[in-house]
Length: 343
Image (tube, rainbow, N blue to C red; front, side):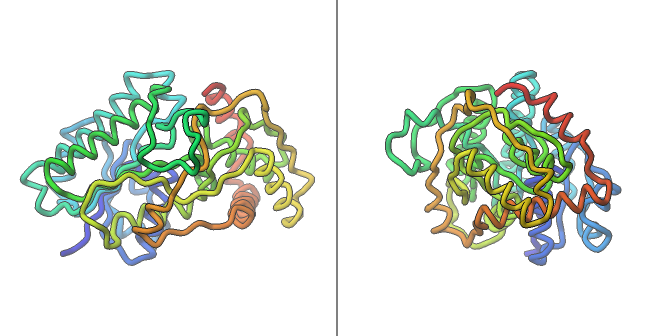
């Protein structure tokens, strides 16, 4: 059977990283579906060599009719559901956050349940978030496994708990592979949205020789964007048990201060230490535990986990090149800071 992969939210950092890995792995029938998707944006993002393998479809997962037309035309065999709003947008616009994150997910799984498409659809992979976990005080046993209690602490976390329940119900009703991941703080090329993008912004600011303040401090689980892309690509197409499963993804646990030290170390190695001026607010923390156990996904799939010093250095090198080429300016950092003032 030909593999036809539908990717929602294809121009977010997870979508881009996953599509790049899929293309490199030889999967050349990809449908990119999202509000801002155009052939030109796909060309700019993936280059002419790869863009020809990606079909561009503009639309919203919250619009059932638009999504159904995609299923009807392309008959996907696999779905990577990345479309969704993050914490600041959900807090500022709860109704829109619920419509996109929950109703959009319901539309994906409802169409996957339709007898017109179900026989061809092998697997759906959806993104939840480590935000479904509560504060560290609730989890005395470390590392924290996927079956630990969840807590509805924010609008965003409530929508992600709903995503997990929808995915589980799909498996219960139809016995089709339904996998969900819980990323925590992801950093690296393209990670420009959401509160947790602060750590990528700190690296960008270093490349721009700007002062930057990370607006929260704590110990967190960090994942590198290219690793996240490969992880989701493998969950989509590698052999796996036909089941419902939730996965913490590969990550490394580290305190904010240590992360900043690694950025400074990388800046010295790349001869831009004079531009590294990162500070952090030590009186604010994210209401989510850390030290997540990812043994389950490691057991089921061959997933990468680039050492943090290497990942940070590669990210800084990427943004130094982007700044030199004029593709990244201080406006990106300023706009992020203006829209991410509270958690």
